[in-house]
Image (cartoon, rainbow, N blue to C red; front, side, top):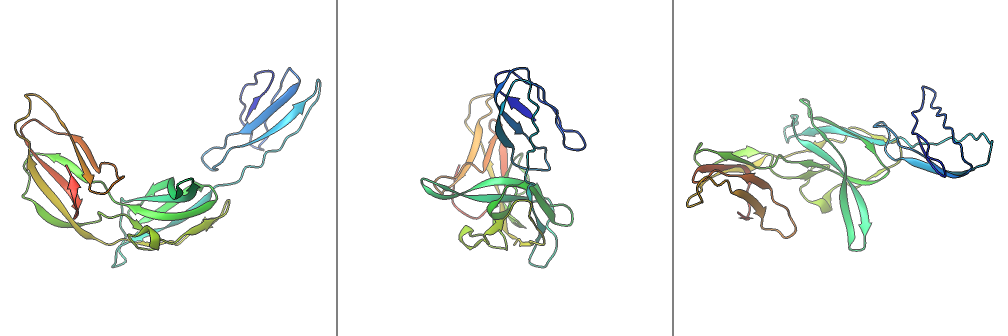
Length: 239
């Protein structure tokens, strides 16, 4: 708990009963704020006037964060481990509606995820694929494999417009929200860097040919050597 006012006060921690003794030496207006730990989401604050010699009691009510949990499954109902799940909160701006990341968690070996400490609002839940990897060396020839290269929204769609919009209240827990994640073709692309300056290590960036997207690969290469891009989904890119 912090208190800001005419006299600086050291921050104090609450005890087992939630009490926080804070002593000040100067009267005046103070802003008292509590910065919650990871079990909660939003800090709270309150302004009060402290008179000379006064003893005040101020209770601060901190709303608990909401929780969303479920599993990530493939089309055959098998768990998909090691994939990041993000909670995207809906926000309104001057330019229209947008979604911002508010929490993330990886799936375990059972495909389970748990998104905690979420503030109240409207959310969509997304399974975010592992980014493509830049590897050095010739490796195998270009080939196709099955992977999870596409962002998928709950309950199981690649389209944001078709995603379920979840209304979350403070402290609420939504469970059993299972996301169906479909395997799609992914590719390894082999290429060679030639004619570069000696001992140089150029940076390679790969951008989808869609305006506004950031690089999906950003890494250093070796001079005049073989490389591979692994885990690419089909589409048009700028290298």
